[in-house]
Length: 347
Ligand code: ATP
Ligand code: MG
Ligand code: MG
Image (cartoon, rainbow, N blue to C red):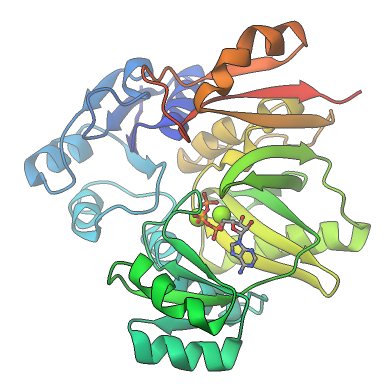
């Protein structure tokens, strides 16, 4: 049978591997960490770094297609892999989404709205950006940030110095603060044949920068619901994208603003396990394997809750209350660490 290579062996890689196995594929996980959660559900795992040319070459030679669960893969590693097999979603999707500046520039090019933004490398840039954008605003590192890490709020110009030092000398972007009514996301897929399928938008609640819950259906006027789905389709088509993408949006009185895009399955799409015939993980594997996309229509109202750190201690209660449980098999419980999630039906 065909083998799917997955870069990254965290929980997303693990859920992709399980979906791939269900479709009869072999899975080869690449992750430096010997205790990567995905390794134990894959047929093969390589534990080597992204600078290990020999290991990357052997990995690429052993698979038919390569996909990934995170966007910060060193470009040199991708060059080595791409010399042997296709990478899906493509390099352009990765380059666009790994750098917040490239991402926002791209979104503007395709005619979508974002928060006002400016690149900030030093004090002078920040002063200029603040003069333009004002406060409140948020300074974010351009690459490698997740779960709200690498971000500093600037409530008043006097916060500028502290915010800049929080960036630790890394290139950053200043974003105007969006006074949103709520946050929603669209999980959408595009097949090798160019067909697009989107899941119903979910409503997201964050706590301390980390996704807490996703609820479907999102409270969203009909017109905005289609705007959200159309925005996602526009992005996928513009990138000639293959696979599943997560598009995070702010809902404001003036309409939708795109926050960020993730070229992969997305935490806010975990509800599809309980609410759709074909979930985001199977959809992604189908797309990258060149198979037809599946039926992603929603047949239930669902609340997905992340189990973060010691939330897992509540598991027996959650089970009694009728939750469907998905644990990631992480040995060590740490504060702020995503240990699993549950899906509950709303009746
Ligand atoms: P993720 O884990 O989703 O990748 P991240 O670290 O990339 O998160 P963002 O999504 O940019 O960070 O920001 C995290 C959260 O902070 C957002 O979901 C939103 O609640 C808030 N936020 C980010 N940017 C803005 C903004 N410009 N205006 C208002 N709130 C914002
Ligand atoms: Mg992000
Ligand atoms: Mg985000």
